[in-house]
Length: 442
Ligand code: ATP
Ligand code: MG
Image (cartoon, rainbow, N blue to C red; front, side, top):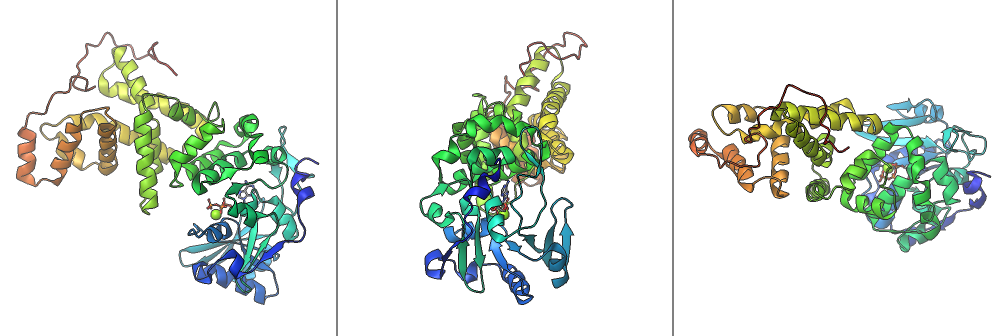
């Protein structure tokens, strides 16, 4: 019964929509995805574009990527294409490559969650049976993600009323919500991400158990939660997603990062600006580095600890490093921050006091820092949030744009002393004690 929720309500016969009803223009479908479905169909298999791509096409949005579902087995798929690779051990999928473009091809999955191996909380651990198309549809998460598009016939096959839900701007989980969240708690984060991104409401039955089920996310491997968080933060709608997480009661005690981000009044302006900035960049198709993003989200926690270490008598620079260590240690445990991201974050933070030294060779050295651009963008965020004086950001903008002579005269300008500045504020060291400060709040 558990998880069979999906199976029980599964429609075996789909509703079929023609071009005038679904409105998908063949021109908007990736040529490579069409190539893949054609090749499979010519070989006698069923093949459809599926999932997020169909949803986005019906909505008139540009899909991020195209996935194909078929009744061919991974081995049968692989043999049909010149550059195709079977990926994954648990449930094999096939990557079909066309230059840089990748089409992910999966075999219809069976609806066998009743027998699937689960953890103590009901989370499905292993589940790798192939099945019928209607079973594959029932295994998907939301009705709007369970539609299949056949480019040859230009038909959409809709097993769970996805088309109707799209028209009503509604996120609806397939099957019994509680059972589906239990099988895979990451769906809780997915519902929020799609609802925020598409500006959809969440159907009452889909929404009702969310807050109660939230703690189940703690049982999901951290790397997977991290991936989903990153998708959420890089969706171009990060701010809306975080607000929605809060609204659904999913932010509390769920991820340490979110607690920090959503419950710190001091850093709110900074985080809001950083996320607005990120959303804007993504919408413009520019790159965003996860390191910069996480460095922003956690900056005010670093500031707080930095202050505490200095209050305990530590020198500013070592105090900053100690603060960075504390914050990163706290996050890596639960958030599985990859080492490369953590290194980027530390670099960006460590650069900050160096922007305050506007004398001698220091600014020139900083210009050569490989992460200078990120550090400077970060500095501008600090200025814009009111944490430090706008003047310092302006000085650096001028310095970077100036020629040799211009730079010298900027250096000769006496920088305005900022009495609150951590590096100019010289404290007397009260001792060589490097132990953690008592005042620290965690
Ligand atoms: P995006 O635009 O973010 O890529 P998407 O819907 O394509 O959205 P993917 O993570 O790429 O999301 O997944 C592709 C499809 O696989 C989904 O549309 C859905 O049908 C199915 N799927 C993904 N994750 C899950 C899950 N946790 N449980 C059930 N089905 C899922
Ligand atoms: Mg996708």
